[in-house]
Image (cartoon, rainbow, N blue to C red; front, side, top):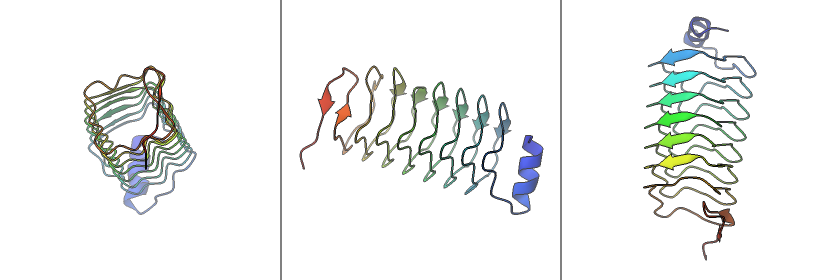
Length: 171
């Protein structure tokens, strides 16, 4: 399905696009709030300045995707693959990214209050990101770059830190 077809169907009220192949799609400045993209194929897609707040992208493949200024507030990315993703100044506030592969580059991204439990981030970059109040329980951050990340009130429980150490917060 191409971008025009997606936007046409969304405009008439369709919201379920689960398991649809959108590889290498280019979308900019569109509103797809609350769309269902469960298990969708979005590899190589450009989603710049799009609004996918409260969207369901669980089990979606977003490998090598470009996300510049995109809004994913409250979205569900559980078990999604974002390895190789390039995200700058995107909003993932309060999003569910549990069990996701985030081995990409996330610069200036807002992950505040997001569920990042059990994420895998082998050599990924979270540079200058806001992780205030984020849940990093069971996250594997070994080899990741957290340069200038804001971690105030982030939750660490059995979290593998970039240097390979385990961090557990006391209750």
